[in-house]
Image (cartoon, rainbow, N blue to C red; front, top):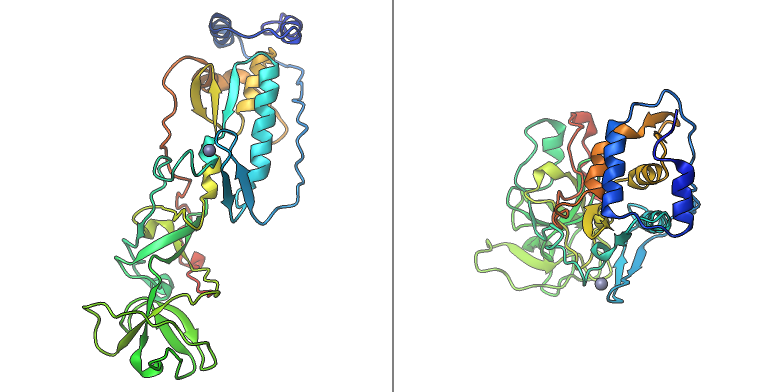
Length: 343
Ligand SMILES: [Zn+2]
């Protein structure tokens, strides 16, 4: 049986720097669509030679290839440096096979792509509280509270901070100069005993900076700056579904989920990268009939025909604004509750 489009022939083409043109790609896609599933096939492993075991850096600094701007990601939540290196290698190796492909990295540059352009809104509001149970008791926020989202996790949790630097202390416990007058004095998000507690201070704490009261503040409360300068504030973990928007304040925290928006430019069309794209493209271009699945087994390349068509056929580019991160809330048990204060 003759396998695929002829590995030897294609390898020879690749070796002499042959570029696949539109007609060739279309013919190859049609041929794959019409081909029978292979009974058995010899699997050629992709030559992946990027470094996997890099020590995980604290942050990640991206230098834009287009405009030279440095974008600093304070956290490397999604192993951004590794992912980027891998995608660059993949693009280079596919290009070497003759495919017209480039990696669009501009999504990592704050100057080239704003949070708004990428569909990362910049304001979050609490829209819902847990209904009942221990989750409701521990929930520190109120509907309408404005928050800044500093991190979002795939598990459906976000870490949030109050949107403003205002906090309130009962006037009984703070002097006119901002000194704390008791132990365990609570600093709150709003001038009310029901309001979220942002921190608890003791007498020895350096004086807080007093801020002017708002016109509608109730008597008996003093407005202060929070957190005090130099005091880290990690915020709270809340479920994303309690927030109106999944959003990031990119002034202080550049969203690591930007890495999920890397895109291929193939024959001029922009397609957001999927993890297995390089594997299936390489198999396709070299005439393989099977690819290795995540568990080390083999699956038919034909099963990836839809994705191959999406990648290789002419059509609309993927829009810049797409779904924002993956925050599907799959776990919904009371045991999973994790409203925490660690300031
Ligand atoms: Zn740039």
